[in-house]
Image (cartoon, rainbow, N blue to C red; front, side, top):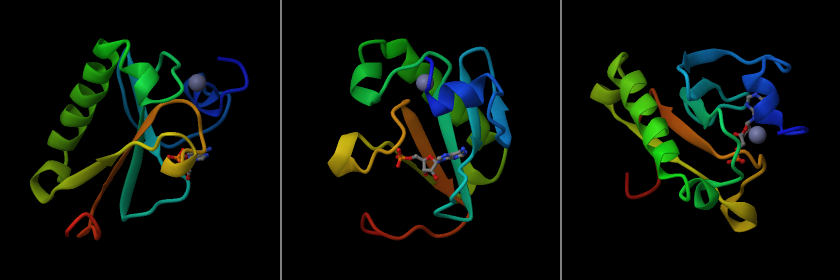
Length: 113
Ligand code: AMP
Ligand code: ZN
């Protein structure tokens, strides 16, 4: 989608530090990490948030398979990690291309931890 920051990242029109890519999914370092490891997983098909993505349920499957493959290939699965997706204003969403934050690399706080 034109004028979408993350669509531009997928097309390499804006640089990013890629950590994972397949036919459907692209993942890269968050520019403002909130944990020692902080990656963003996005689908190559543009939707604005997870509610819209859920109409194309195979895209959710693509995302979580990618996260599973990635976290199994390094220490994230064994040590543990967190997935977060923000929706609209109260959720704190600032980029309106659906994205899943993958956080780890240290003990995470909040949510009872
Ligand atoms: P959210 O607030 O859930 O919409 O998350 C948007 C995330 O995108 C934030 O964590 C930002 O730090 C991150 N971000 C914004 N611009 C870039 C960029 N050019 N490269 C990597 N991450 C970015
Ligand atoms: Zn987009």
